[in-house]
Image (spheres, one colour):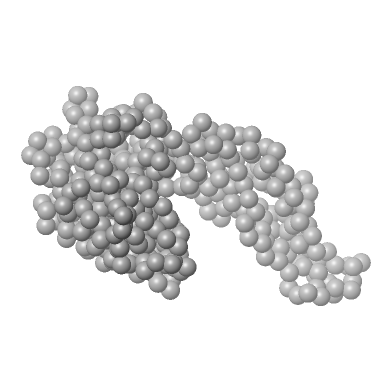
Length: 384
């Protein structure tokens, strides 16, 4: 294990960086951790600076190599979810049995530390500095709106990206699902609870809508599959309606989440939900409130072959090519036209009461990142 890896990761976990958009009570934001990372990198000969996405919410950007060379981006996010419900001290960064415990250790400060140490290693290589180029994107706000990733791709063109989210069982992640959030509104007629002859319950209407959506999920969506990410799905997540126990409900709002496969669009999701809903309630309204695209990378892309070969070189095992059901910043880079793959460390407890990262896997990630950058540089030179 690199001598500086455990101290860096310990420091990162010890600096709270809870996303204030999802946990306002303990949301510190990324400013303090960004300052630490930027200073650490600069002290080791890496050109590093911060870029504000919005006031007080910075990315850290770092660069090693020749400015005229194609850039490989190494990406990890600085923010974490909140600490409510944790059963371990969130910011003590305790090490036990080869695991480092604390909020964000797994999701994903282990990856941030690996990128920082890999950048310092590459900066110490005169050959790489002449022939290669790598950018670190240590971004803000992934846990909420991905302000950091969107800001980075607006400012920095790149040839490829390696995102370092924790990967299931050491897999090489080529694809992940997207998601769409939709509101369904049904309308009734308010009346006294005794006036069955006048009142119309929007909640009763919504009951029929829920049944229809659930049937559509089970009978249609589960038939749609992608070889890497599996089946499409949808669930009814939140519901709110009515004004009082003795009043027919004048309106009801259902919030639906639809997990999308590569190739599916928010427009298609909206049209399908509308078609299902209006079969049981023609007056119901469907609105898309938020969406994030799925992502897929061609397995023959140069970044995939470089990372695959780097993982094989470091671990002596060819990684499995996999997809995941959750969303990540890879889609932001993909949508910007940057071929993007994901490989990360092992551990458990993302968003959970106990969170830890396997230190040996973080050390391997350092080697894989540096090796991937070297291989991508060589491939880019050969493609000239």
